[in-house]
Image 1 (tube, rainbow, N blue to C red):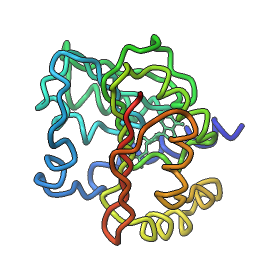
Image 2: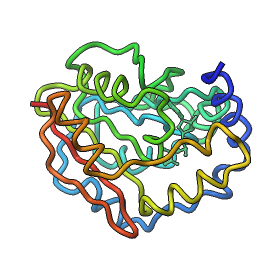
Image 3: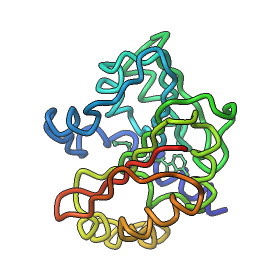
Length: 199
Ligand SMILES: C[S@@+](CC[C@H](N)C(=O)[O-])C[C@H]1O[C@@H](n2cnc3c(N)ncnc32)[C@H](O)[C@@H]1O
């Protein structure tokens, strides 16, 4: 029920997402991926939406990008925008249940999506499962936690109003509990970020 409701909400957003979302300046996205080595590796863009992050992921020369989302209409936008590209595959799936092999992925990116996971521990465990040893999980918002929570708590959709972001320390603690090692924990006015390595 909750799953279907969320899917419908994001399906409705797909038609106007690219007009309304403000893509951060290129240098902020480049900085996000600084020092990351994923050449020829598989990467996952969880909650890809219309694929805003895909061009930046392609710049890293990965072997394959899985563009994962629960919303068929968001994924349709990805296909319209990027056409047939052997490096991009859309995948209709939930973060909490990824139809991907264990230890197969070098990077899991969650940009602007973590608060929407209905079971955050389950999703983090799933990321841990699919990542290779040494692989990186990034949970990122290019705005601060308070702003994320302000936007969500004013949503017209009741279910989104409870999709609130915990402190980075609390998210980091969950990651550590699962087995990740934290390499970055930022909880600032204009940035929320966890970088966690599977060890
Ligand atoms: C706020 S949008 C962010 C889109 C994109 N990452 C960006 O930076 O523009 C959140 C996206 O996550 C998807 N989503 C929400 N819950 C999800 C889940 N449990 N698993 C996978 N995708 C999910 C939504 O359908 C939506 O497209």
